[in-house]
Image 1 (spheres, helix red, strand yellow):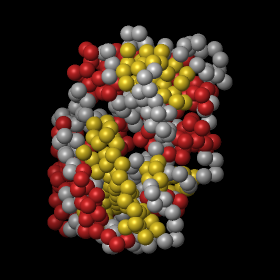
Image 2 (cartoon, rainbow, N blue to C red; image 1 turned 30 degrees about the horizontal axis):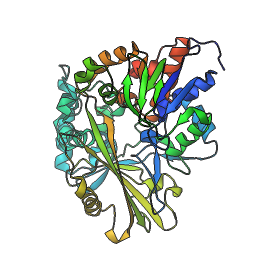
Image 3 (cartoon, rainbow, N blue to C red; image 1 turned 120 degrees about the vertical axis):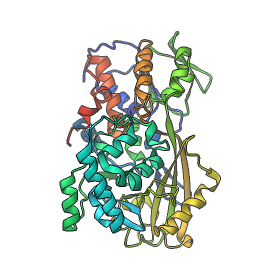
Length: 465
């Protein structure tokens, strides 16, 4: 515990009880600082890492969350919060295309493709490796220069449009880092020649998941560890008066602050504030909405799905970009593990990729049947839908120009915008990154320690846990 800090008796207000807000609050308590409050619009903690139980008793997350980490601090905290309540998994991720399952990453397993498609992809890889020269101008060019035309056409371009809901030509590529497996041409060629599957890539090739309660259980426990009078639920922010350092809240009250830590979306924070000169600037930020649909089923998964964690769907015949066998994460995600199982799919939406929401559930079920993930619609016993308006912060080509001007302007008013949408950096927006943005901000404010996660994603994501 630290008592002498730069914060003194300053009043700290934290907006949002997701991983970043709770990380800030937890670190304040560790530092012996009590003059703070967390304001949460929802009646529960967790934010985008919340979990829900539907009317039939199935547990659902807001997307396919898994727990893996770049930080010892995060790992130690997870161990303390759920000391005996973790289930560990070896990742099995696959791609469904050409009416077959292909192990992920795609480029390492092109031997599973039809011969003509496999040859096209391999030829493109060889040309890309031998002809790489000019620096790419956008994500689409980065894909083509690294993977070649074949892989770009058959997988990378269509999949990335489905998941981001924006054309890759309009996106930057600096965020990629560990998120996309790089090309090892020799390895790929020998995988083809030797008939070998290549499954081990990725920072999350081993992950853990709560035994009960879904991902949200982690954040419920962290919130419960804070003194009860430090969190106010059902309390949202309507307006930020940065000049007078106060918030107008949804219950009609006002909340003064010396320091404001905001995890609400940066565009919404600025638009509901007196910072008029930056409102047109945040209009340049891009994001996608994510519709999560849970399908509770009777029986058991077909043999092809029993070992799998999640699957990617690049082709146009399915509206979803990813499907997770959610009952494989924990048997307690379904009411009766001996006779039920569950699938969870995600669909992205943006102005560039509209979704007919009134037809979406029917389209999802039709695709699940067509792609043989579900044997019969008669097996469905529960359907759950949740839409996260701000789902993915898009690494748009002008993103850094916006955040590099807006974040310092906010900080000059004592406002620190952090987290998945507070800082708008997808490359450091996993749960571990988000919590540590909150922790590191407190260390910076209290002790003058630099914030590494927000400002050096490249260093953080090189860490091997």
